[in-house]
Image (cartoon, helix red, strand yellow):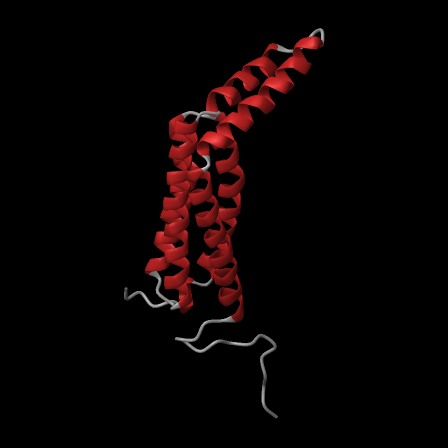
Length: 168
């Protein structure tokens, strides 16, 4: 009687289903991120104007209330300061760079190149670090949320490193 394994094994040089799925998800996410970054760069003036108007409406409502904590006003002031075209364009450039790096990394990992993993990590670091280094609340909040997802993907890719080739 033959002994069979309940877990399917993938021969070296073949991509398993899990790696294929996370690469496809990265293709979609990074591709969409590239489109969003380009759109944000092009529409930065409009987005800044709309953001400032929205913050002004919220500030008007908050100012009508009594006993508003000081930190609420500080947060709104910080967000309002971030609603300028220059900052939004800079954020869009970093987002574009990050998404291009993660997409490149995923393409390489799709082709079972381990070097893609390190490029993916670099893209995630750029996404998290750039807004934090700019010291802005809006970018930092967005980076922390998307960065968390990036870290989850890093772990999922790391599980698959053994099937990738070290040659670039």
